[in-house]
Length: 334
Image (spheres, rainbow, N blue to C red):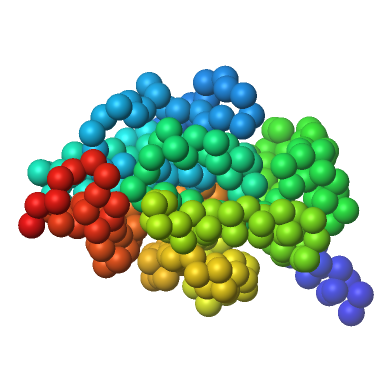
């Protein structure tokens, strides 16, 4: 009986070893997956003070006579991982220009990687008169409520038991075995995503980070209530680190931000429904590794934002619509 059990145990171990050896051989024969690296843009932003945007290309011509939209935000608006012309602000400009070619359109991408909402507000507060936008769009990502201090962010992550830079260096086996290396990477990514979910929910507790974020959103919202101010649209982006279905882990955070905006009378567009039914692996720069929106996700966002502007009468569809949207740059012609 014991010999039979021992024989079966050895046979199972041998089968596992053989299967692992076959997988290792297959992984070595197959080319390493590119994971989208051929099309991922790893552009280094040009230096700028922390409270100023990092323009991709020349600074905008503010003397231009145009219907002007200013898109404010962090790396999602900046277009981390995609070409400048593929980021949603540039796509909005092309869509609106094609919709009404008689009206010059200018969309300024006023963004910087890493900004939270409070930093975005401080960056633009003193420049609003100079920018003189007809429409102001805030591209809001769920992590925009986090602290500005990198050290404080690290502390919060470590309190939850994880910081991406703290993982041990791969051992000899992980360095020399593609199978072990793949398994190690998958486990690290899984742990990072789980901690990220806990981290994002934590920063939405009624602590100092959320209160500062709330005040910044209220400040943006007050612009839209001014008779001579720009129209203001809050656009909430999902995080592309998981499927955007019923199990999406940040749906409650979307609601919290949307309810705050509704209470302040802020026009809001939650993009989560726009991605319904689309495999999230088709939307992220590097699926489940880099959760920034890729070219397809930016295209969907731009299309939905344009639809919202048109529905609200804030898009430059003829001279009359320009007058309704502000009308400071064109004569009133019906």
